[in-house]
Length: 81
Image (tube, rainbow, N blue to C red; front, top):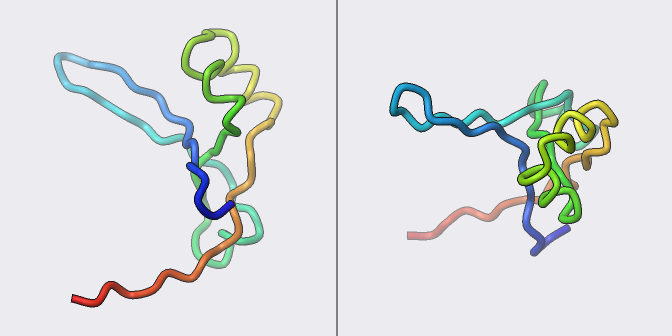
């Protein structure tokens, strides 16, 4: 929805002193498919806290496919400089 944040799923860790981040992706929905063959795996606002603090929630959310589809495609205007 316009004006609302998007919550992307990801995995973060520090490996050998290097901060690493992976954004999880999934097959695209109808609005993304014409542009790309993958899209970020999105969570609802209610799913964010369990994703971050509950070790059992992440596998459950991923297996249930209870993630949100991408929002509808919006046309972006060009920045005038």
